[in-house]
Length: 186
Image (tube, rainbow, N blue to C red; front, side, top):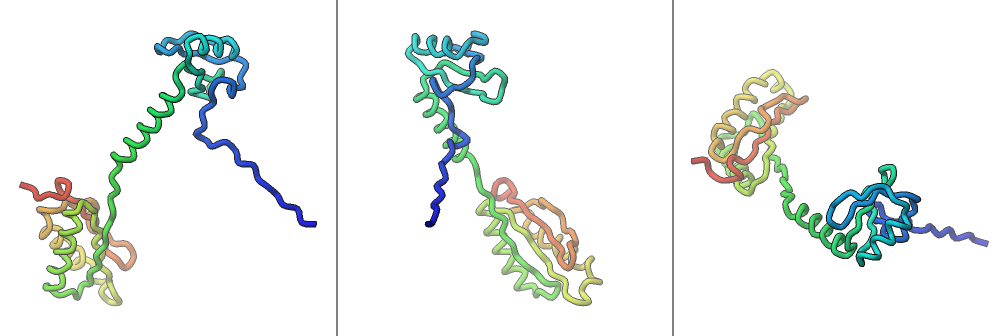
């Protein structure tokens, strides 16, 4: 006979204990106005919350004794959700776009790739400029760094150097960040 194991889902980490879910014998109570009442037995704290028509919400479970606040849980949960949404809106994702060059890249190709870099920077993205050195070109690291500095100079009105040209193995890497949030400097 085959045994089927069923796993119970545990409570999520962000679950807040309220009212009868609080298991501690004593709790540090904060009133609805924000005053600290002190350490009370959980039953007494629950009675106080009921008298005010509010909930006893565990705010800091890890402290000894746990800190509980007398508040309206529905309103508290709504405010927490709003805070998380606001924080998410304020985050700006910055992508790092990459363009590769060789020492043998011709002037027209460099200009063409600089136009792409310019577009990336105007969009507010960072740009990683990678110069790959093949075979005997490893002896020409100075020329490679000079080439990347020239590219940075050409794009100085759109970019500022976030990381100067640096040799990493067979690559010379430079990172450009948008100057003035992707707008032209004046």
